[in-house]
Image (cartoon, rainbow, N blue to C red; front, side):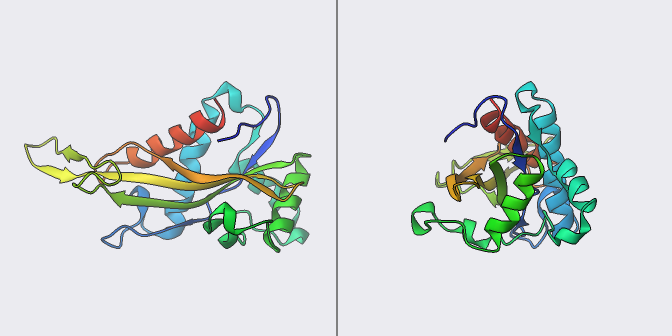
Length: 197
């Protein structure tokens, strides 16, 4: 994974999408898809806010405030045309419209070329056959063991001036119980630690 130059402004846009859990509920103990997305944004804000190396980052709340002050732009940072970022990099040579213009406009507000797009949040049950690092979680009330859950965040690092996806991959949180708020917190910590070391 590439690293951004020290002292460079990087725009972190809001998480763009998520998928429901196997039982139809949403990640982060949320009632709706929108709540799950904003919960993940809040966890990312907290994790980046704890890191001195992230002091030059523009976080989702600041980005949203700037866009709200410029309503003629007709850009919603939390709902961009992110779907081209769901395919592997080798299948794409450039960032297509309208996503390219959306990202370039957001980056221009902060005179930077670097944008990070959290594309999709998922929470999956760890399999017991070792796939996706299978593990289990013991309930505190007894000896019962339940399959662990783990949160993933597909993320793109972009140099928008070159229309280049520098990196597209998944960050992975720690395993935990399905009803644990820590699932998204550990994921956010991993994202911040790796992007702003």
